[in-house]
Image (tube, rainbow, N blue to C red; front, top):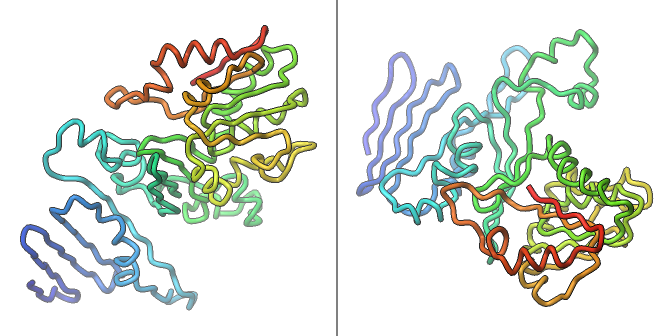
Length: 323
């Protein structure tokens, strides 16, 4: 490694280990440090981020207010090197993935990792993110007590971040705008049926589709077939807005706990193969949209037997809705 001082203040260092390196430069007067890390390992560097922030993100005291200011991290994570198309599709941090394009790659996005879990079925990522031009929402203003002419309406630091859910690197839901999507997915089909009583949801582990279904008073039973129980568990904790049914008369605070709801943790294809269903009034497919360069799950979109089983499961006036 090698270090040298900068004029009038600061230090610049670089350390090399085989083909990997770390370098950093400091500007003490501005309270800024920049780092560059490169590794030839196949493992991502993201797990090291909290420790880097702890070691280098030293809080400063505002000279005018005397208050301690939290450090702000601006970072980008990129994959380098050559990979086959198959390896790129399998890597959630590849620059073709939604997770990379929305979160890990852009420097202009301020982001915080809420949880990343690798289950037997998929990788689940939940992040908070905001862009530098984002301004406080109406909800932010109410929560913080802004008046009509409050200058803080035009200050980014008072804007709440957006929470995003990714499955295997593909964007599944944006918490702040989920209503527009899930209302459009559910309500046209529900209103197309004269009185939908028996509803089935394929996927929907975040709870938002279930929430919109339960708004209909005619509903007597909802079967939600979700392949990954961990997703529902994480949604309860980290996506409470999406699975919140507290405003629905006769429901519960958490939509999954409604007495009309049956949670089935199973691959949808297997569920339909084992159950000869013929009485579903409304069937909704709520899953990730396949990207053009990624493999399409055979049980979800292009299995003729599965599609036939779904159609056969509908009641006389049954309706099927998908993305």
